[in-house]
Image (cartoon, rainbow, N blue to C red; front, side, top):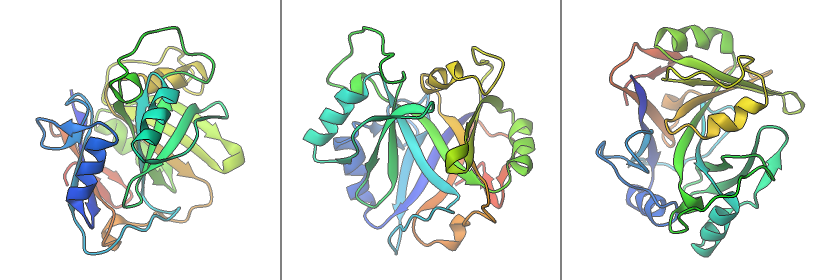
Length: 247
């Protein structure tokens, strides 16, 4: 089974970035050579950039998400480590989440395994971020999901969820290299949402933005997103002009 393997990002200070993800977010170097919590999920790699990353709302790359069983514990740990992190809140019927900004301006979303108030009574390892983190989502943007999905399906990805967020002008589509199917066959069903965040492999999240003419292509930016690799090799996936398959 293929998986999202390595996410490469450009940074002015790659060593400092690696230090932040180790010290603050608790990641470690994996067999892939990238940073992460396990080799079951996507790992991160930072490469040298000559310019600063300046995120734009039209960027093809948006963020990664780190899922945890207890987001309040994660928040307390991150504050104690000096991170810039927002207070956890329930965002509509999407998720119980917060956001961390790393030293170079990349966003890391924290998202709990459960909606606010739904967490079951359970013991967690309090030495781990949020009781046990994993990189659950890679989020990209598109102006045209209809042109993207056929390539994702041809590469062997399975549709796992659809989350309309109409007041904000976008819809979220989720795909995974997996044979699993969501609990409810209706991909828009709310009960599928926290199920997604508990998957131990990294899911591709595509934000289809209404009214977006075209995504900012990463190769036009000296800083920021480089690309993603898939392992083992899968048919090339094109998200507009992005080749998803090598970095």
